[in-house]
Length: 146
Image (cartoon, rainbow, N blue to C red; front, side, top):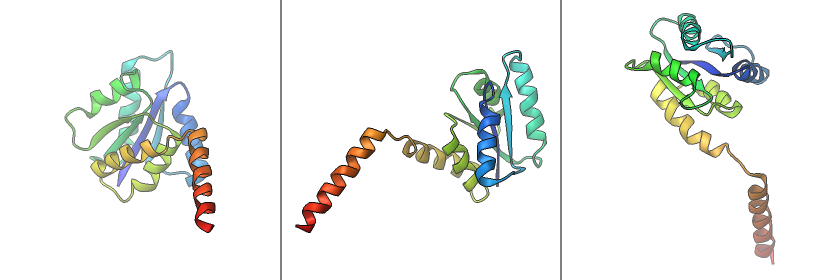
């Protein structure tokens, strides 16, 4: 089982956690750590350490972070570096959080990171392109009926 720490600038992380709880209910294996503008990197690392301590010792933990290279990313990487039980992914979104929550109980950390990388690419949709695909499929179906 993999535990999760969601973090990003401002109130992004608590917002994502709140939305995820509407769908999955509350869960002790996920924590939200906001990066507040009045805080620095050391404050954020301390909040991450606190979140890590709330999980079972030596648990596998995945950080779901907003931006590559931002302060939440840098703080998470500084804690995860050299540790096999911690990893960091960027580009956090509600679909990513939901996918992580759904699969974390059944996957190892490495399996989950690989799965999220694949699924996250599929969650990005452009309406006009999807509508065009649907229209083409309907047109093809009508031609097949003739």
